Length: 78
Image (cartoon, rainbow, N blue to C red; front, side, top):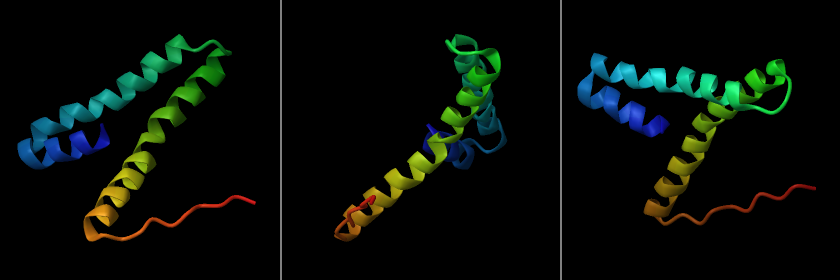
């Protein structure tokens, strides 16, 4: 979804900014649906939506590296 918003901004300019409103609406939707305390629901919703941006960066890196023929490095946790 973040990539869609960026592309919309490049194509449509200022009217594409309305797509940015999707993110606060998503936080509200998730915050109201949680099963924990209201405070925890809102924090969880905020960080779930915020986490979409690093996910997009990782996906773009993967696609870019695949296009260049680079081999992905393994991530090991010890």
